Length: 115
Image (cartoon, rainbow, N blue to C red; front, side):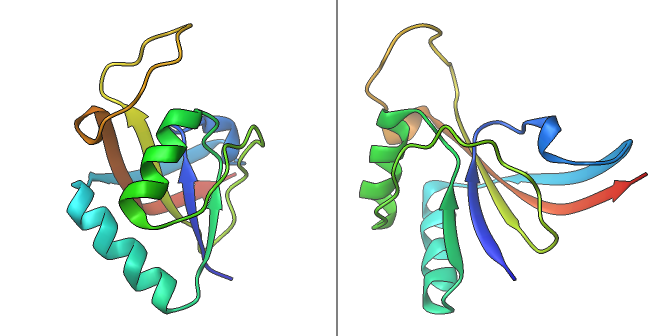
């Protein structure tokens, strides 16, 4: 089953196996909006693993979603479409309001996991 995953900057423990090959491509907010609309139209499940409330709130506003912050750990499943969302300049230990220009967004286009 295909899932559209929103994840924090790639947690390597999400992938089982000794060898992990990934291909990542950065996205603009417009590209992300278009992608999300396509997946929503096709009934793809959207799952959030981002815990930063301000980032999740902004994504909801920009993309017309209703995600909640999550502290769950992501585990890769074959077929997942992973959208990695982080901040261009993270501020550790502080809660900051995030603006669209603060986001660093990418899609993981290819995942190969070997033993």
